[in-house]
Image (tube, rainbow, N blue to C red; front, side, top):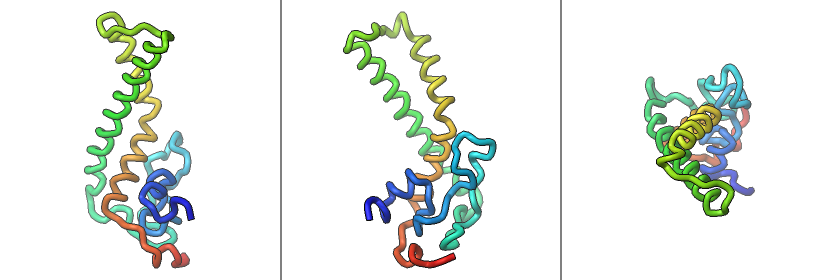
Length: 137
């Protein structure tokens, strides 16, 4: 069974949180023109992916948390490179390098952050159901 039936499976596979079979997003590729387009309902169990207007405004808080985690990871990576002797870093001399590198990293990962924040947000409100998992479309 693996992770099937867990919130982590639904979040990382970007599947319907109720049945874990239907896709949340119309496109599987995060780096496509319609990367943010979501299905209105699950094609397998019929779960509505937007239960009310403005439902995903709360995903902005999740996106903010993911962005903060990204900046912390970027800082830890730079400090780790410094401790390994691969790079010498000081904020006074390399602040621009740190900020520009972080912004580039953020821009590159923005589509993934957007999709993960929506996936996490809907998983906070919809639980997995064995009954919905077995239901056919």
